[in-house]
Amino acid sequence: MSATCLVTGSAGFIGARLSQSLLDDGWSVVGIDAFTDSYDAREKYARALRLQRNDGYRQVTGDLVDLPLEVHLEGVSTIFHLAGRAGVRDSFELTSKYVHDNVDATARLLQSARQCGSVRRLVYASSSSVYGDAPLPLRETGHPGPISPYGKSKLDAEELCLAASQPGAMEAVALRYFTVYGPGQRPDMAFRRFIEAAFAGNPIQLYGDGSQTRDFTYVDDIVEATRRASTAPADGLAINVGGGSRITLSGVIDLLGEVIGGRLVVEHTATARGDVKHTWADLTRARSLLGFHPRVGLREGLSAEAEWLRGRATTVGQSA
Image 1 (cartoon, rainbow, N blue to C red):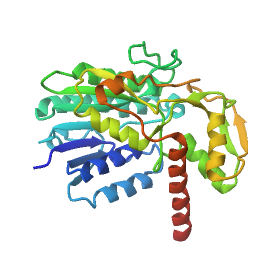
Image 2 (tube, rainbow, N blue to C red; image 1 turned 120 degrees about the vertical axis):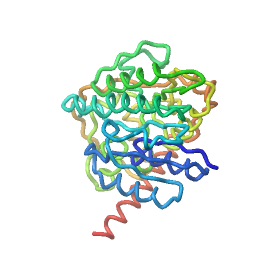
Image 3 (cartoon, rainbow, N blue to C red; image 1 turned 135 degrees about the vertical axis):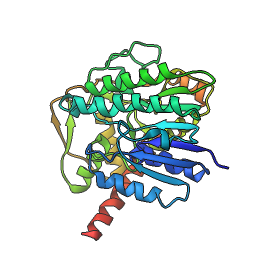
Image 4 (spheres, rainbow, N blue to C red; image 1 turned 90 degrees about the vertical axis):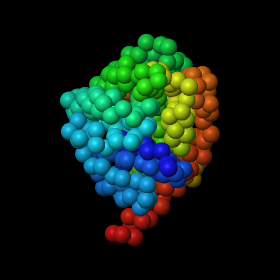
């Protein structure tokens, strides 16, 4: 009999990829998604429909705060909690939504998981945004200092999960994801905006002067680390998951020009509120506890995302 897990945010960019990976390996997956307005919900519905083609998948639609979660957690041994409202910039204007979707939803899920009794492991998708502008490389042992309501909401939810961890009962691990990209990436994220602009022959809009650096992580590496965390000899801990190196955004655009073929035109705009200057993950804990080593380099990953978007543009054009 296959193990049963719950994936929250199952129709999201990472959640759908994780759900399909689990299904391919024989898991039964209960997927929960609220299909919120954080970006075009049609992309989420399309991913959910693809998942429902699998016999082992069951879709539940609704808000974690309101759903009768005890019913859907029956027989579930592992929770992958990826649901939440992402994005730094919107969080300044929509703070209450971020608290509801990230903090309140997590508190409700934890309450139900403790009551259900079958859950043995919870893996929470946290964020590098909890660090703020901390010294590099960013280490889990450092003191978090988020500089946006989004980062604060992720840290608050992370702390709830780790505080709920009970060895031998429901153990919890929080993974601090560093900027995830690849096929299926959200439309508000930088790489997707850059590539779509380049394909359309439009200038790339870049916040700041391009000297800021990021540690980018390919989505399949994130999925691997998330799955490893479900059986790792760790509980009550936060663990970084990153690509293992950093690059300036100007360097990314140069590399993207090589991948796509052609010089890209860039228009600089003011630095966005809440954006940190640099990120770079210390992966010592991920290597030792998860056995995790990122496999996909930035050039390879950008090429994969560009090919996905090229195919998507063709499909949309044919449909039109």
